[in-house]
Image 1 (cartoon, one colour):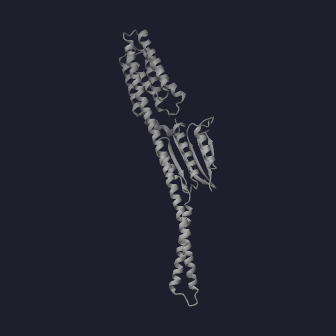
Image 2 (cartoon, helix red, strand yellow):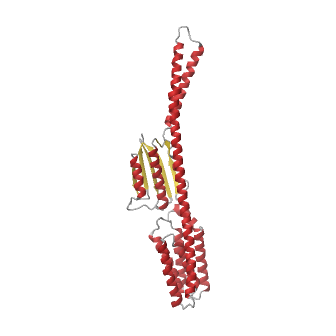
Image 3 (cartoon, rainbow, N blue to C red):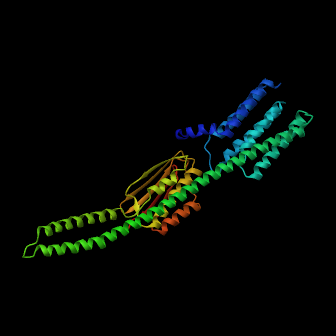
Length: 374
């Protein structure tokens, strides 16, 4: 586990479902070792401690989407340890360990898969109670425990679905805000161009004509009044000011992507996103702006869902006659890069506006998008 991810991991310990699981395990550990007639059996303590260790690791490790195979193995190991514990001790309280394991299954498996696991586990529990310990009501106890397991699994499933929906809604909202910001910037850019043209075409031409007329009057042999000379000086000064304003408006041409990209990063609680957005990083074409924005969106989404990263760095800057967007993270990376729909879509968007995309997944995940400036 990387140092940058320690704090988020510790925060996961105090999440409601995780905290409930740890408290329940601690109560079972203490209760079984104190009241069970098999409390002196060292295997019992080892099994209970092993279950707690597996539970703790499953909480602390970074989540990934889709879940890694070892994460499923970790929870299935808890199911196996719970059944072995039930075989070592007659204490029915040990079967509650299956409830803790059941609450973790829906986030890692499809519904048919985790239901199958619970059914098989409870068949094994029934056989342990009836054949190994000769319990007088094995079916009743098994059904009761299975009911608790299904309740825990359903609660965890709905909590997981609600959390996923909330995260997706936050991302959709961020994308809408970013698009809205880009549209506003496009409207402002068009207005700047319109004002620049109006100032240049109307006021500039009028003042130039006025200056010429005043110059003719100043050359009159009869002599021009001092006011004419003053008016010519003022017209010349005003014309220079207008040209300066037009020049500044022209320098501000292009779409500013900084606010739109910032909107994408705002709702991401983890990993930490670091932005480096140059003030002069502007594009003239709305298509290029949209392509870069979608690349930033896809790269950030990948860092959140798949890479297991603790830090993400996003940089937007000019490089000669190109604008370059770089997004890199400190995630797990990949030995073999698989081009999915998201990466293919990024390449297609950039190619449509004359841009290119470079991807490096050897150390973390790095995306570099480049578009030409006109």
